[in-house]
Figure 1 (cartoon, rainbow, N blue to C red):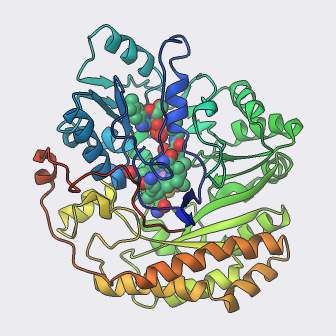
Figure 2 (figure 1 turned 30 degrees about the horizontal axis):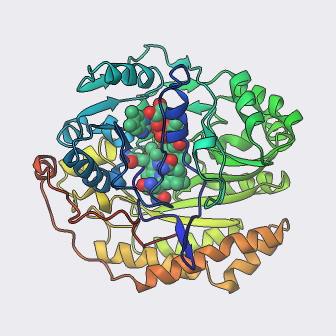
Length: 462
Ligand code: B12
Ligand code: SF4
């Protein structure tokens, strides 16, 4: 899994991830449980260098949009050593035509029903160029997979070494989000017994649930949370603001051990929420959302996005103010980013507003398009200003105290963002990205990032 240069920090010579361990690689490795002769070396480049001279028979690389340049460079390297490379993941699923130039084999879509057969084909010398996930026509499907191979990953180096997933996909379709594009409005559930089995294999008390929206399939969520209660574990995950609408769900959520949720508030402006197809977020209900979650003793990471078409230059101050009023425990800001394949990308491209086709810029911290009501510089500087302002101790204190719960955890949870603010301040200001037509990226089979090194890059953020 290539490095994105994000979500990590350094302690002396040790690089640590400020996030949970990725589930992708341990999930893939588990899929060949019936082929015990297959040995894996799992590398998350965020915390470990890629052993470029490793004597592998086959290399698999997981590609996200932001990491695609690094992924293609690593693929070039291993192919240069005559080791076949399989590329998979969200970016390959969205942009197979680009990825074809960089891999010997592509997996498009979920690999659960593919990976084991792919390995068999490889062993028989019959690796195909492409494996396409067979999609069922029904909106809800169930997938049964073995427990992740946690034994293959490092336990140290992560804020949370154990990650679980119960559902995939999302029932909503916000205009900027890659999830509905990847899953095409399908919602995949794992059998609850399988999820409980996997949670039981976790040696620690805490884990991360990385479903993007586990609470929107209300009946499934209730059953899952009920089944989690006897395990007496603690967990953190993601949810939509709709979570507070059902009192029974909230009660079970709390009893299941949830103590942290990341929520996409996105904007305090209802017109914006309606325009981006997130009208289930009701701006005038945000106080209630926070009140209910705090009542359940759940710490909230509340995310807001800057640069929507209705955002003028006053949006930064307004948002910072609203974040304080709402007493969001750990706020987080992003710049509106048109990930390829999304409705937003198609619209901005049709309006000739895309400024950068360099996918490495697509990390929600760069301006890659021309905003409607301000200049790209204003957007970038406003984003920086909002971060700086929000993480002043004079603002952290009343937010953390105001929530009236878990003060030390919330307070210390804010501190890493102060480091991030410092790093943001040290960065150069906005520079107009080099406009590069999309197709020039796909024809280059040279390493797009220059000479390759085995060491992960040194930059870091929250
Ligand atoms: C957990 C998570 C994270 C975690 C861990 C990321 C990681 N590297 O695992 C953290 C918090 C670090 C993170 C960070 C970010 N994330 Co994130 N994240 C997710 C999330 C919610 C779940 C991913 C997951 O674990 N899935 C479970 C595994 C089993 O599924 P999977 O990875 O898709 O893998 C399956 C297939 O894709 C395929 N596959 C994948 N790789 C490979 C490789 C091979 C060789 C093969 C054969 C198959 C294959 O097979 C697997 C099994 O079926 C997804 C949303 C989602 N539902 O996918 C967003 C998502 C992947 N993230 C996204 C984004 C934008 C980000 C950030 C930019 C956000 C930010 N501003 O910080 C950063 C970028 C980090 C980076 N490395 O570039 C976008 C990606 C869009 C895109 N086009 O790339 C997604 C889709 C969310 C969204 N709303 O759009 N993320
Ligand atoms: S609710 Fe979240 S995961 Fe679902 S489409 Fe909207 S942004 Fe994406």
